[in-house]
Amino acid sequence: MNIAQMTVSGNVGAAPEIRDVNGTKVANFSVAVNESYTNKAGEKVENTRWYRIEAWDSGQGKGLVTAVIEKYVQAGITVYCQGTPIVESYEKDGTKMTAFKLKLAGAGSTFRLIGGKKGESTPDNQPSNDVGGDDIPF
Image (cartoon, rainbow, N blue to C red; front, side):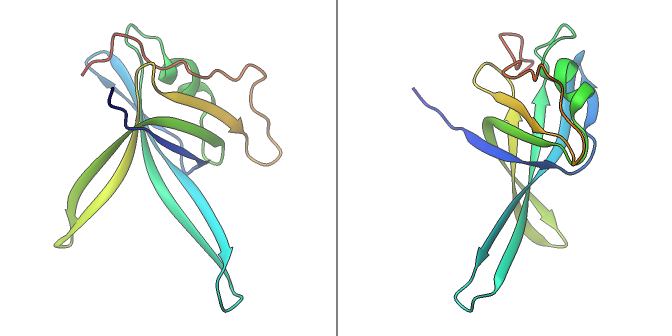
């Protein structure tokens, strides 16, 4: 068996962009993962790394995007995502760049709402593992 999985947990940067691909909803959004540590000089260092998330409905108007992402995901909310890593290469200002994207599709993917923005709460029934099935369009 071959498996490639990646886990990202952090805060959503902006409202998801939701589009239709041949009758199936797809949501794209970015998640910020913060890291902080103290270096050898005793200075506190903080880094933020951004990961792009691409989530697919299972088709027939149901699934992760329709049931959860459209309704609950917004800028600032904390999410947990586990899925297939996709490495993309592109060119920016003549420099070759590499970016990681996490694809949520199928039964091997997990998505959870961890928490809301400060002062807000997430729904009592936090749906998870609502991804996929056999109707993935690729």
